[in-house]
Each structure stands twice: as structure tokens, then as C-alpha cells.
Picture 1 (spheres, helix red, strand yellow):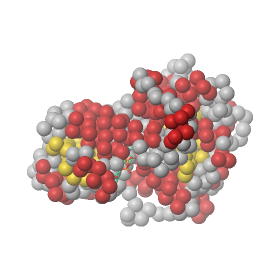
Picture 2 (picture 1 turned 30 degrees about the horizontal axis):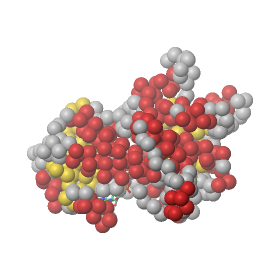
Picture 3 (picture 1 turned 90 degrees about the vertical axis):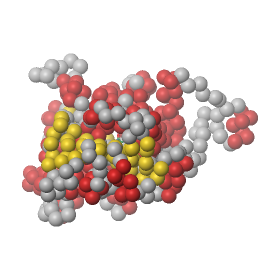
Picture 4 (picture 1 turned 60 degrees about the vertical axis):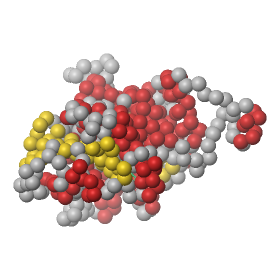
Length: 456
Ligand code: NAI
């Protein structure tokens, strides 16, 4: 709301055509409305098959003056419970601007900005362009996931229709602003291999994003997801959290706050030591798996929870993931396990009867359970994340000369601005440096207050 007040008149995003791929929740609806209030045109999809709040998507599509029969809102391609084919069709629609081109009397326009969460939209453009250059979409290999096969099929159809569609789209993209750890990881990999074709702003590593949304957001939405999915009493249970990064810290603290005995696993000795000194037992999952009642993964890594682990779990133990992709849990292996039977208790809650005679409860089919079983992080913390997103879109769109092809973070003064904008709502009284103090520590009274290497 503060950014709308600051920028509504100057319209810094006038002319921006944003292809957005981010969980279509009520908070995202406010982000979309803000981008539009600042002058942008937007097309939107969700970045997860289960995370859409259908009422939020409908409100954005219908618009403030429209009706379901005659919508006046923003093109949104998202509903809760998409199939993988539908998901990738939706993602492709955010790059299909022929209606906007016709309205503008142009033969062709594409988006010129991407707002991404997890990197799927950026990946589609990169892969489409790569295959167009090669002249064909490769056949799937035996190690390709089911989802990647869907992407290959979709790009094959797209190349049949137009041999240079993704090349044209890529050429028009000024840049992408990426929301999450997994997405920025993919962008840094593309940059390192020289394959990144447009600049990127890593929104995740604004301090006011990852140290707030990933931690305090999960601290709220993980127990929310567990409660809505199962309503099991967490108190007294043994909970296990894989990964003690920003998300894992919030997850472990939330579960401890509910009275669970929490065990944490880590591969990084620094994070493992942090977990130990925060008072958590740190163990390998296989050392304690038989004791675990609630198992949560939040690493952004793959196959962290294996079929072998799940076979050893207690009867009706709960398994959930809050990392970005479902491959943290070997769902493909579980699916292929002879004798395993999947029973739907309710949408996004499945009992898997295992050949051991025991069952486990898998939430959101191994996908982000805080969004699949609940409604994700609440608005206040998403305001902090999305204020960064809006500032990053303005930065890239208005000052592209500052951002060469590569991955950048927002300057610290903007990170501090995001925090400052949220202080009044919490009744925070900030201390102001005196001129003497400012000179003594060599920090300007108006900031920035910390060096780039400071870790918060
Ligand atoms: P992070 O990098 O801060 O933490 C991940 C931690 O997992 C690291 O400390 C790493 O050493 C550890 N790790 C990696 N492999 C492991 C393994 N095999 N076993 C145990 N630990 C392992 O990343 P962050 O920000 O915590 O994000 C984690 C995931 O959560 C990402 O996929 C991110 O995109 C996602 N995310 C999900 C949110 C949600 O609402 N569910 C919100 C924000 C991020």
C-alpha cells in the first residue's frame, strides 16, 4: 500500500508486460493489483499445482467491475488441483499475449518482464529458446522425471506451431525477479554455465525476504498445514526437520513451540552447530526414523526422504514437504513400490498402506504442504516479500543499465526501506543515530547501516 501511494502517480511500470508465475493466493492478488496500479500489464499463473486459492484467482480474473460472464480483470491461469499437463499449459499462457497485441493493434507482443517463484517460467523460456536453436526438442531420457516429459511434450507442440516463438520472447525479456531459494539456485547455475539469457534479481536474498518469509512465514504456515490436514496434537510427538536453513529454522521452532520433541538433520556443519546450540538434537534421519511421528523436509534438495525411510516409519506417521519441489520426498519411488496402496482421506491428504502392514500419511502428494494443506504464509510477512518484488520489478524495468546479464540482489538501501515501511504497523520505535555516533561507527544517519558481508 505504501508503494502504491509512492508510485501511483509516476507509473514506473507503465509499458511493463509482466509474465507472473507465483502461488495464486490472496496475498499474490494484492501484489498483482499493486503491479497494475503502478502501470503494468500482467498475465499470471500459479507456480504449484495445489497452491491456488480459487476465490483469489476468480477475484483477479473477474476484476472490480466485471462479472464471471463478462470479466474485466487480469488474465489468470490457475486453479487448485491442476494436473501436470494443465500446470504447464497455464505457465505457457503467461507468455501468450496475442489478445493484448490485438487490443494494441500490433501483430505480435510478448512479455518484457518475468516475475517468477521457483524458476519454472524462466526455465520454460530458456528451454524453448535452446530447443529452437537446436531445431528440435530432444526425446526424453529414462532418467527424466514425469514432469520434465510433460515440459518436453509441450515445447514440442509449441515448436510445431512456431519455430522462433521462445527466441522472440527471450529477446524481449528485460529481466526476471525471482522469489525463492530454489529458483535463485537455478538462476545462479544458468549464469555459471553461461546459459542465462537475461538479467535476474534475486529477491529471495533480500534480508527482508529470506530472513522473514522463509523463517517467520513457515513458523506460521507449517503448523497451519499440519492442523488443517490432520488436526493431530503436535504436543509430545517426535518431529523431525530435514534442513536447518531459513525455512528449517522456522519449522523446527514452530514444532518445538507446539511441544514436540524436535530432531534436525543437516549436511552443513555450520547449520548443524546452529541447530545444536539452539537446543535441537541433530541426527541423521536413518538413525532415528523409527521414533518419528511428524517428518518435514525443507532443504530444497532432492530425495532427502527415501522409500527406505518411509518403510521404517511408525504406523500413521505424517510426512510433509515445505521445500519448493516434491522430489525432496521420493514420491516416484513410493508410487512404484510393489504392494503400496494410496487411499485419499481428503484432497491433499493420502494414506499410503505399505507392504510392511503400516501406513503413513503423505500431505499434498509431497508438494509444499503449507500451501497445499493451508493457505501459505500470512499477509504481513508476504507484504515484506512482495514489497521487495515490486521494488525489484521497478529497478529492473526502469534501470536495466544497472543490471547486466547475471544474478543481482537489491541494493541494501531498498532492503532497509522494505523493513522501514513495516515498522509502524508493529509499533516499532526506531532509535536514530546521533551525529557523533554516526561519525564514530562510520555509518550514515539515514543508512545503509550494515556492510554487504553482515549476516543478520
Ligand atoms: P537454505 O539454503 O537456507 O536451507 C536449506 C538447508 O538444507 C541448508 O542449510 C542445507 O545445508 C540443508 N540441506 C541440503 N541438503 C540436505 C540434506 N540432504 N539433509 C539435510 N539438510 C540438507 O534454503 P531455505 O531458504 O531454507 O529454502 C529451503 C527450501 O524451501 C527451498 O526449496 C525454498 O525454495 C523453499 N521455500 C519454501 C517456502 C514455503 O512457503 N514452503 C518459503 C521459502 C522457501
